[in-house]
Image 1 (cartoon, rainbow, N blue to C red):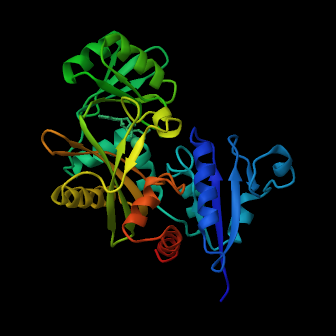
Image 2: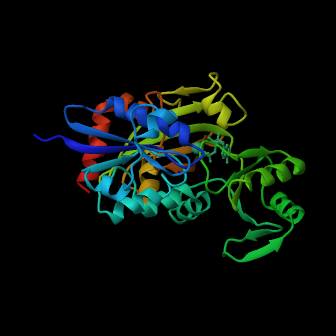
Image 3: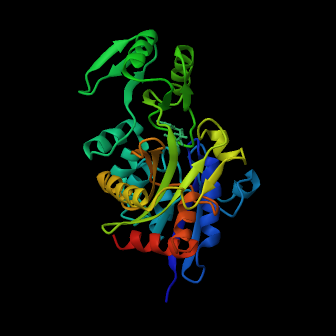
Length: 345
Ligand SMILES: Nc1ncnc2c1ncn2[C@@H]1O[C@H](COP(=O)(O)OP(=O)(O)O)[C@@H](O)[C@H]1O
Ligand SMILES: [Mg+2]
């Protein structure tokens, strides 16, 4: 049997470039070499594409530039974009692959872009009747701010007025997030007006659309989903961040952060979270795979959705593959299944 020509794309133009290199490398080393002829592709932070030979040093890349990306991709059978964040997880690369009619692993354009944009994901979850934290949507323009209300009416305000309104609408602590973000970059938690001002100014460096959210106190619970029309949900994992929330530092630098598999919640709650994960994935029209993240309140047991990651971390210690492993699906079998789902979609 001929091997499947599989392009694995890693790196990318987002703030999560480095994480993607680790995820992609891990995918490549776990793929079944009997089945796949692997074409590793590296995109640098400027958006230049290279044939990847295991290192991103200048010397290694010097002779490996892909001059015509379209022509290169056209020769392959299927693509696995292991890219996190903007240009990779947001529908951009999915659009490029649609244009050349190439099957690819994971969500299509629409679901990718909805999940990448926290404000629009909220709107879809609301429509699907899935509980989530109370929020406010604002835009940070050059010299002014706009509060976008629930009817999408835009109200121009200054920063102080935004804060006054936020204090009326939401309780502290308030999470401030760039609508397009990942790996917690640009996200902070404000407990008073000074911090709120700082948090808004900080998040505004990453995106003009910002989300202000009330804190949910409870467990951070994650669920992996897998499938196209028939979708399965994995066992659940729990995050215990070393910081006051799961910040960039807590995610990648602080070894005190812990992940627990399975999560410490009842069977009953577990199956509720699993059905909500599938419901949310379907609501955004997800395909292939995603990791769906929740908060479960310690006091009320209410389940709140936080976000969907359409290309979740994929290193050997990442939650997405770990949850499947715990659920009985080995990393390399998981990769086979993802590639099958891409080719039979
Ligand atoms: N409403 C909230 N209540 C409590 N914690 C939150 C809330 N929103 C975000 N967090 C914390 O911030 C982290 C990052 O937020 P998240 O929305 O998941 O952004 P990212 O896409 O960057 O992962 C979460 O993992 C969680 O620890
Ligand atoms: Mg998150």
